[in-house]
Picture 1 (spheres, protein in one colour):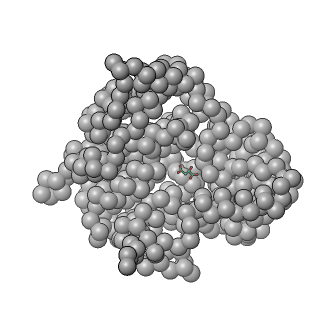
Picture 2 (cartoon, rainbow, N blue to C red):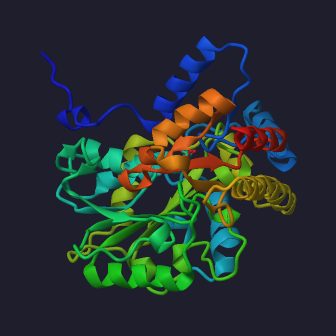
Picture 3 (cartoon, protein in one colour):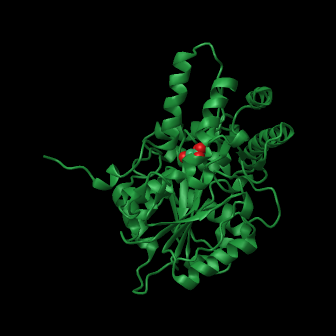
Length: 405
Ligand code: MLT
């Protein structure tokens, strides 16, 4: 008789966004006449920009000819994309990243979930709380989180770093020293950002303690303020302690198209000289056959002059929504955070409602879907997330409805 992976059996409930999707479909089935506005999952709504569409068409045409047809993609991704990323993303920031340290993938969700595989089972993990659920769930699957306490929502072997209004949603350095630290800035879910000086403290701490930071920079394109780093490699010493994960989903609308990349610098080594970069390359080669050529060509087009202009306009469109949500909710008396360097607005639930109570209330009374803060961790209890990724019209309508309840 087969046996299942016991670590998977420890996972409580379903994945956060699957739980929300189930609740919303039950509601729509029971109330077919209601027009639901979805500001829950951070999924984009604007179409792919013309520069990307043009690149997709032309790459598809290449597939039709024996001379230009492409089969398996190279393990790390095509050189044209890795070199473009090196030159257009990292060089302008003064960050030293070479093309063979960039691994193209099908997105930041897979990379942030899979990266834990190259670390030992007894790795001590630290996460911000609240946190993108993938980091914790995949470490549960990897068997390194200990036991779950349903009353507190905490795993016994995880270091939680609370992020609340009291610390501006930026965690303090943990007292108990972790081996692996997950950081995400601009932050999902709170929308908080970190200054370069604060991020430098994390890099110094990781180097002093021989820890590794997994830095999720999926939302960096939304940064508008000076002094907020776009990459952890802007910090001195980050090459010896930081892995950076990036995505085309939020900056160029690839949530359905799928493309991302991870940087693993050669300077991150064990005392015996084993490079994490080589382990990740080994994993990539064994478990992944590359993002499709046509999608990598589309990704390259994002960095063209037209692509930058057009995706920049989309980001401005979503940030206009973010400002609309933030101002509208503040006018209605809510305490609101985020939404300045990030497309997420994080609000305090009214009347001491729990996050899930407010979710149900908003769905039933305003027919608006958001994400309960407690779904991201215990310190998210009493908070709620709205995304700026809806259409402007839906965003305006959602705020009007929320103001009226
Ligand atoms: C979110 O809503 O937190 C994100 O869209 C999830 C994701 O990017 O996987």
